[in-house]
Length: 204
Length: 318
Ligand code: HEM
Ligand code: SF4
Ligand code: SF4
Image 1: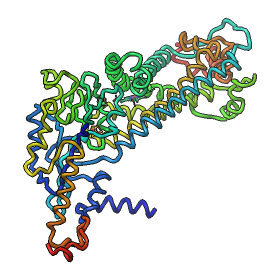
Image 2: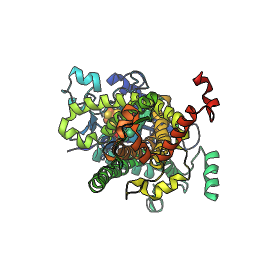
Image 3: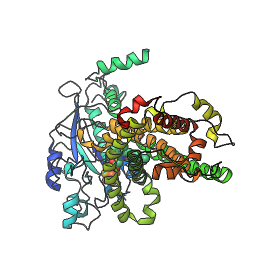
């Protein structure tokens, strides 16, 4: 069984924010809720790094451990989903999550939070696949259609990868190797593993 | 000192560039913030380091230690009751009643007490319901109950705080510690052994409970108000710290309240009636609060005598 994962290649992400737009559009996510975001470190300076982040579908998910009503569950693919009918909007998952993934529409007085919303890895929720209720609460269930998450599917630089963890990490390792090979002079400043001796031995 | 100044230096010069590539990953894990076009709370932070720490503190330290402490308190009170039994009146009731608590004091006491019990039950339901109630009620019913419990807790909190502040104002004077309290402590308040240590209107035990309420109760209120309004954009760290202070103080209060309720009901003959009706028997007053008894006796006498303190009550006599 595949273990679904996200991977963002920071050397490729160009901070175009298209993944966010695609996600909002595909799932008709409510106003004020963002299931995915791009964060740029060192914006406008040398060493600028952009990363697209959403729920990472953690193995020992902190959100699932803290939830007072125990509304999270894991699919066979390792996707972390939750049941909005059970959620009481306490916000504890947002406090516990390392990635700031859980989001809340405001609902009522006292700063009361509505039901938690987060990235579903395009896998819907506990409702029947492709039902209206499922779309209403969780958005489209692309996994059940045999498709992968839209954010990664449409990423123009293929920085964002989503799918079987083994497959995408292999892809990423190939990229890293490729990059090192094509590096004319592996210069001393970078922290990447240098292919020691290649230049001398193979010339190209 | 040097560590502190290092901390301040790193805060003041918090560098925006990290030339070292590996350093970036380290900084990201430690919670460095960048820029994000998405404008939601703390969206510019990739990884918050404190989330999983807070999770461990809540789920293991607070829930675990708290459960043990509650169980031990109940057990200790039960054992104490079995050994010591009820503290009875040593003199037969005289039938003469003295006013101990005014009507407003009694209302305030039971107003605050009922809100406290409501808050304790609903708060503990959120913390322990998953472990104890879901297997019994099922996920659906428990979620419905937890939803109500959360709302009740959110609204009862500020109402409780109002009662707490009013208690602080009207009972402040009576709860200042003095010399008699030392003897009271040395004789375990008369609960162990058969002595009757002297006490004014409040004995030293009541004073301790009062000051626990005024410290832990105030902390619970302040942090609770913060948790009540998560929409003000507080950093998650602030909410996590608030939650920890809130729950730890709540446990101290619940343990104190268990002792307080024990002493005020089955532990002491005549105490609960005093708070319900406002009146206590003369024998009860002499036994438990002798100095207070002497004081009100003196006041009564002065009041009756034309000389003495009559000027003070002049307006009333007219
Ligand atoms: C005085 C004003 C109070 C306010 C404003 C207040 C508010 C809150 C809020 C907002 C939460 C978070 C619950 C959530 O978001 O679902 C909370 C949690 C909690 N409160 Fe209070 N509270 C107050 C007093 C108390 C008192 C007196 C107790 C106990 C005697 C108490 C016990 C708890 C406990 C145990 C939790 C932790 C629940 C958990 O971790 O799951 N609170 N409180
Ligand atoms: S919500 Fe956060 S903690 Fe839960 S699985 Fe997603 S990334 Fe992990
Ligand atoms: S907000 Fe909802 S999903 Fe998150 S911990 Fe609370 S009840 Fe669970």
